[in-house]
Length: 375
Ligand code: GLA
Image (cartoon, rainbow, N blue to C red; front, side, top):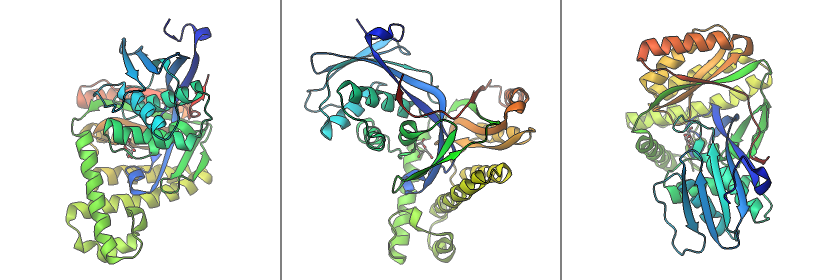
């Protein structure tokens, strides 16, 4: 019998959350700083051991199943949702976790393609379940790293560490400021009277993943340039705004703008963390607005729909801050909204967005959730 969520007696059930990023966008793969929070929308994995070394993976969302042989010598991605699960199994095995076979049913409440890291949530839920099913201790930092590796090397998407890390390590009621180089992190309490309101533009522009890789290459070009002029430059994280002012004229305009975004964004994350510690949501919101402008004008990963959504939100009373969240080119905005103002916010933004674009948005009111766990 397939393990199902309706019959928990026959399976162990795990869940891993999706995420929003409050600030620090496109900094993770530059060894920089990010400040995501997990949201209370989850991917679930129900697992039961098998006697062989097969994975049988039904998805409740797609009403289909996939089989995967853990003994196969050269496993390859199939361009399918199950790659996230199989890729994690492959990476776990590669570092020496010999996994038991399992029936592993997946169900996800994280909207797909909305920029809320549904892929990290499935990777982490599956990885957690597979490790526990084989009686291995879970090291959350290692699990995050291996899930990222699965996405980089098996699925073929060059994402940074942010999404998998927050899905593994989040704590309820907090945002997590992560140093993506050392993987040291700080939990920052979010005010209790604020909700994380996500506005899904319902668009996902095709260019997303190719432009993502282009941005990475532009950042690498920036690093190569600064490394010829300054000692100890390994990533844009090591370049200061003074360095950019002093030497930036030697860069082409596009690379200059990409570097300016990353360097200023890292500084904004540090300032946003102090603002949050001092409960200064006004300053925090200003930094979110600056981050959005920088992503729109310098990094050029926003789009008309995201800009409309952010502009609409900024005009609503009770909104501390609004910006695009995630990779960009569609997906969602994150809005910090006073709890009592949420109904009005939803109404104004939904109507305004529908009028401006003809598209009915999805608005999700979330709280900051805990990371992956058995339930
Ligand atoms: C995607 C990637 C992350 C990060 C963001 C941009 O969500 O998966 O690693 O790079 O884009 O901040």
